[in-house]
Length: 475
Image (cartoon, rainbow, N blue to C red; front, side):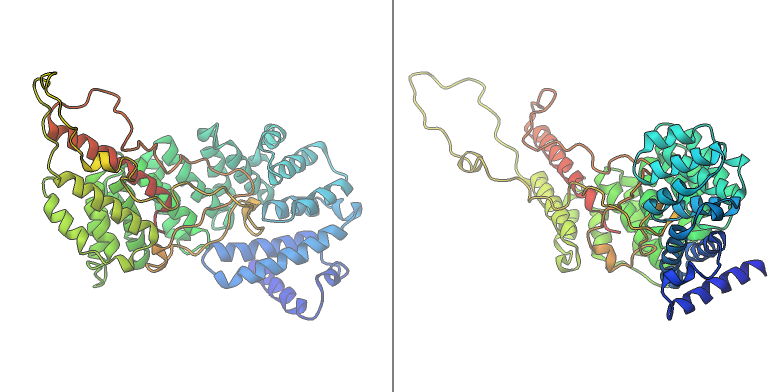
């Protein structure tokens, strides 16, 4: 009943804002903690998949910002209002407003230390934030503040102290179940567990996220971490466990996830995983089959492009409808076809056992390679390097998340993904793109003496160029 009443107040505020400016609410006697509680409940609805509440969140942030800017020392003498100020900052609020309001408040040293850490965090000073928040135990604080602080500390410690970060994210979930805080904590736990090589923790966090938050506007960030984790932990996550997790998704999301896994696995040379994911993407569910999807056909071909069935693979590649692929996948198809062509090309002739007599002068034989020494071996790669992160807009926990569609549709999956842009430090992940070895680079060891072996070695080096496509994997 109390929860419904606060949501009702939030809706009422939005209706009134249609005829009153946000500044008018600063004079209506509403306390900051009342506004912030309304904001939190709206955000919890968003985390559960209510995207229609996104405009409500934006308006409540505006109203709350105006109220906090007008607050004075007397307002913040109420501990609930000062905690609300800090929670507002970690809920996607304006860091300038937090800093100005804190300067007016009179409170105890611990609260001031927390405020300093949050301001440093929001302004992109992680080292200073860690130092300020180091002695603060979120579990000793009031629940509303402790949950957010555990989330912030977990995010800050993730790059250098992942085990401690996971423990803090567990605290955040314990203090605030079923909320946007838990959604963010689970999502970040997935990435940290993968980086730690903890397959059991990765699978558990992924299962819990899919069960409760698959329709969150931040779910595409989960999808990024999930696909990368499956590739990283391919030896620790069984195909049966992967199927159990994706079975909880709707058919369209499951298809897109498998397409992305198939692509990454094929490029990384994980033939079994690529074949499994491609088959699941083509198989579909609930009577919906995707056997004609050109992406599934392309990805299932990549891992076998140098196999004994190269003629079949080449024929399959030639039948793919290029018009239904994104530009990055068309480049990938070109690269695969070039590699397949190298595999079936006749080997170079063996060198003569003995040099020709010095008295006999012969003209050098002109070959295609000597005629066009600068001819590129593979087409240029689009989107190989990730773009630098952009500043994220306000509106999520700790202002670190940018809402996206949950997991894009099959049509959207063909477009090049946009890079996320957290404003403050978040979970560190390994670079998607592996170091690329140019086909023309010298080998680290001796070249095989046999011409066929030499041709295959060159082909494998060319396959390394496909790694450049990794940064443009479809969503």
